[in-house]
Every structure is written in structure tokens, then in C-alpha cells.
Length: 278
Image (cartoon, rainbow, N blue to C red; front, side, top):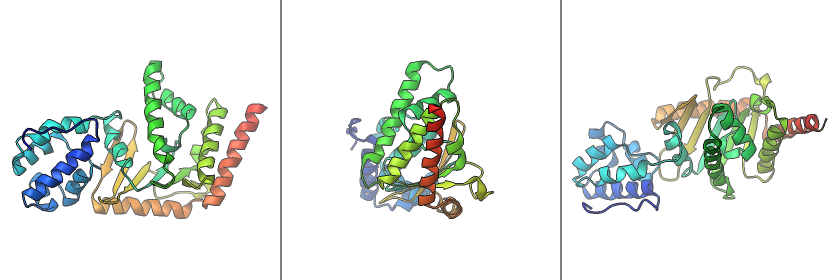
């Protein structure tokens, strides 16, 4: 392994994880035993091996030392860490692409996987009102590439709870939001996604502090991701993930049924379309 390098054109993180599994098993260590000197859990090592978590350079150095891999992981850590997404979101976006199920609560925006080009452009322009057009174009391009994840007819399962505020935040161009809501309804009607709306009438709820994304995997522990302005955190601790899962379950219990939610989404879209024509 000493002279080997990963091919950066073929999923570097997945390849790095596979090499980590081989090296760990060759050393006769369990995931928990490798995690102990790194002060991380065995499940964290499992996520590195599955490619759902990024290997940072400090871990790579220690892993090379523990497993005797002659700097292999340090050399290849850079290629696996490259991302077109902001640092605070990169790990979550890459894990999202490997998830078998994604459950998300969106308090302010239509989730990225459900956005149209015009809606994404309006969102990014609001974030960066003075950015050059080419910067916004690149951000929109990356977001639409993420949304292509739903082109697969079955995987991942995507279940979303939209706060009613998402439907009502029309801004200056109601046509953009009408189109975006019609896109969401078409995904619902094609049975590709499950969407519930958390009505204003629901009152206080379990996720009033912000957004939430839960991701499940076939061969790795579940992850929870929470996000704020220019920041985000990915959790793998089972107790924390369980806490966020309960919060999501409570949200779905308080939200409108999928059928009622679809009716409301299409009704609001129709209102915006009527206003535009008027």
C-alpha cells in the first residue's frame, strides 16, 4: 500500500474508506479498537469506511501511524476531502448522496433536493446580493446536480415536513414560488416523495429552533444534520440522532396528512398563479 494512490476520478472517499477497512482488518483491529486511540466511536470508523464521513488530515496521520500504512491515508486524504459545497455542508451533501432514506424538516425554504432552477437562483441571490452572476450560476448548477438524486425512481426515500411559512414566503416574484410549489406537487403525485405541511395552526412544535435532516444508510449508522446561517453540524452519536429522530416523529404527528398537505400546496400555488395573471 505504501506506493499506491487513489484515482481521484472514481469516488475518492469511497475508495479511501474501502482501503481503511482492508488495512484495519489486516491489522486485526475492530472498528471500536481503531476508534479508541483516535477518541472516536466504532460507528465513526464505520462511517469513514462506508464513505459517509470525511477523513480529516489529523485522523489520517494517526491512522497511518496505528496501521503502519506509510503515509497512504495522509497522501490521499486531500483528494477525498475535495468538495464543491461549502465546508459546513460538504459532509452532509456527500452523505446525502449515499443515503437510503432522507427525512427533512424545512422551516423557511423548500429543501434543496426539491428546488427548481428559478427558486434556487432567487435563494442564492438573496444570500449573496452582490455576488457576480457566474458565482450564482455555479451555486445553482451544484444545487440542481444534487436534486438529480431524486431521478432514481425509488432510492433514496425522501420524506419532508414543510413549515407553512415555506409556502407563504412569496417575495417579489410569486411566479417563481408558484412554479416551485407545482414542482413539489408533481413529485408528490408521481409518488417520488412524501411531503407534509406543518400548519401555522399546529402551534409550538418540537423543532422550533431550526432545520433538521436525518439520513439512514444500508451499511452505516444514521446521521443527523442541523444547519444555521453559514454553519452546520453533522451528528453520529446514537443518543443525539435518536433525540432528533423523536423530534421529527413529533413533527409528522403534528403536521397535516400527506393528502391534506398536497391540497394546501396546490391551493397556494393556484393563488400565486391567479395573482400573477391579475
